[in-house]
Length: 196
Length: 177
Image (cartoon, rainbow over all chains, first blue to last red; front, side):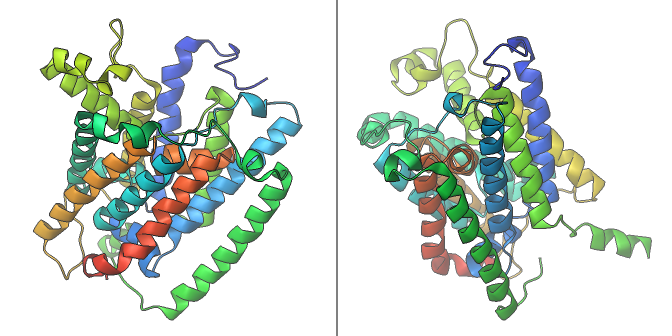
C-alpha cells in the first residue's frame, strides 16, 4: 500500500532518482503547456489566455479525484498523505505578496525554471530575484517570525474547517471548475487577441 | 517553407486540458510514491541556505531560519526537492528542444524595453521568493499540492495568490497588454 517510499515498498535509496524522473515529467508538462512564456502566463490576469487557469484547475481536480479513488480502492492511505499546514495569516499575507510578484514578474518559481531551461534571460533574473527574496526573509526572520509561526491551525483540511464530507467538496469543486472554464472561454472571445 | 513551419510550431502548445490532466496524474503518482506533492521554491531556498552557509558558516548557524535546514552531516542540497528541480530543468529543456523553442532572449511586450522587463522580473521574483517563505510554499508546493489533499492552507494560499494578482493586474497592464 502507498505511499511506496515512506512505507518501504521502494527502498529509500531510490528516492532521489525518482525525484529526478518526476521532475523531468513535471518540467516537460509545464513547458509543453506553454508555461515557459511569461506573456502566456500573464494572459490569465488580462483575459487573453486562460491556459494557466485551465491547466492548474484540471491538474488539481484530477489529482484530487484520483487520490480519493486510490484511497477507496485501497492503494493509498489518505491519512498518511502530507497535508500542507495551515498558518492562517502566513497563507494570506504570503499569498498576497506572491500574487503581486506573479503579475510583476510573469512567472512563479516552477514556471521560471522551465523558462530558464529554454534560455529566457528574464526568467534567469526572476530566479535571482526569488533567491534575493528568500535571503531577505531569512535575514529579517525575527521580524517575520510572528507571521510565519502565528495563527497555526494544524495540518487541517477543508473537511475539518467546514465539517462537510470530502466527496461533496470534490463534487462542488468540479462544478465550480467547469463553470470557470466556460466563463473563461466567453471572456477570451470578447477580448482583443494578443500575439506573443 | 520549412523555416516558416518551424516558426509556427514553436508557438504551438498542448491543449491546456491535456496538460492539466497529465499534470494531475503526475501529482497523483508523486503522492503515491512519496506521500507528498510537488514543489519548486524549496530548491531555491536550499540554494540560498547553501550559499550563505558556504560564505559565512557561523552566520548561518546563528540565524534561526537558516539553521532549521542545516545539518552537520548532510548538505542542504541533498534534498528531494533539489533533485526534482534538476529534473524540471532537464524536462523543460527536452520539451523546448523538441519544439525549437530554445534560444537566448528576453521576452517582453513590444511596448516596453527589455531593461524594464528585467527590472520587473527581478522585483517580481523578489516578492515571490519572500511570499513563498511566509506562506511555506509557492504555487506548486502550497497551492497545487495543497489543493490535491484539500488542505485549508493550500486553498487559502491559492485564493490569495490569484485574488491579489487579479486585483493588482491593472497597475501592471503596460507590461503585458
